[in-house]
Image (cartoon, rainbow, N blue to C red; front, side):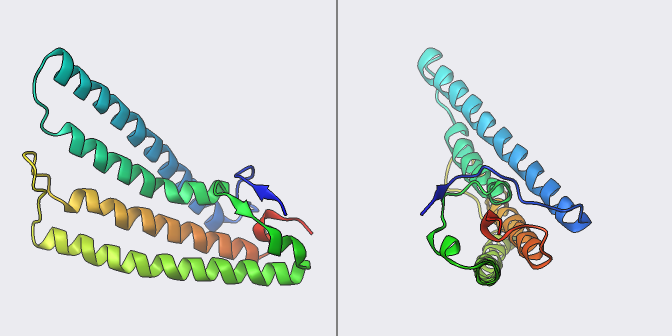
Length: 181
């Protein structure tokens, strides 16, 4: 049994669709990283305001929470593209290449189906917040459709990356589970 972490990027084989999805996932990863940096900067500013200036903060805590949640969601397709999740490949290693390919197509299909269902409900939730004008119960009172949009975008981009991974395995551009024959 081998335990791997993201050491290889999903192959695109020069395919325009796969290259485009890879580019979008990479941009999402950079945006996610920028959100983490911004949340760290806001946290430092909040500490300065509270403990050096002895003033109260209004928006900082809520902004950091929303930024970190959005960074996590927008980072999902990038992590999938880089195969950055922990992968225990005991079963794929035990299978012959044709069975390994079938298992990869099945698991990517099931994963895409689950994310599609989550995306449907995330969109419904976001639309409800937008159409009813929901606001947070804090002094800042941010319109909740704005942070909830990260659910829709993050899950939508993850679904797109999963579809691209499925296509890459189907077209034999990428090896199932990253395991060569």
